[in-house]
Amino acid sequence: MKYHQIIGLDYAISQCRMKVLEQIDWEIFIDQRIHYEIIAKYVAMNHDGLMNLPQFPQQHFQKSAKELQMLSILEKTIILRSTNLFEGVPGENIYHVAQVMEEERLGKGILLFERGDKGDYFYIIVNGEILIHIGETELYRHGKGEYFGEMALLDDYPRSTSATALEDTLLLKINQDDFLDIMMDHKEVRRSILRILSERSRRLTDQYVQAKP
Image (cartoon, rainbow, N blue to C red; front, side):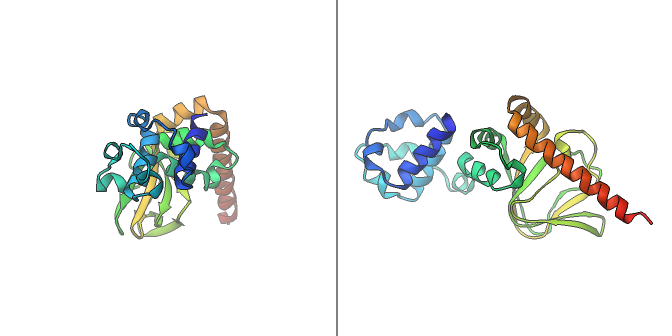
């Protein structure tokens, strides 16, 4: 599986498995985005395992400072696996989700979306904190590893709340079209999302019942 090959490459470099690294034709990875990201990360670190390889084409794996700030697909996969949203979903399936997830960075006090806006993205918090509110009324606070906006994956209704960053925050986001494509192809992802939406529905129902006079 491609996912396991990627994990294997990352492990071989990080652990300086020189006998393995010496047998690799590195130039085949130049046009393979995920492998390229992993190798470039270690090049930026001046990793001994790569720097000591004879004829390693270091110049082909240089990334700009801006690119180095971005998460690799492998890093996104690890982040997604750490959330209960993808509990029980095989890594190779999460890997497909990670491929289409985008990054969004917010400064403290920045409004992510406002009540009434089109709901077109689902978000997972890499780090930072997001306030979910209606006007000045606070509803929830979401922190690292938590997610919100999941209903945007299944319907086209406007946002029912607003979301604002309480501190500098890094998010991963995915739009409805990309996610629906993945759900069609990977039943484990579909099952996990439906479980989460069911839990959310029960939670809202319980809150409504408790709030009734």
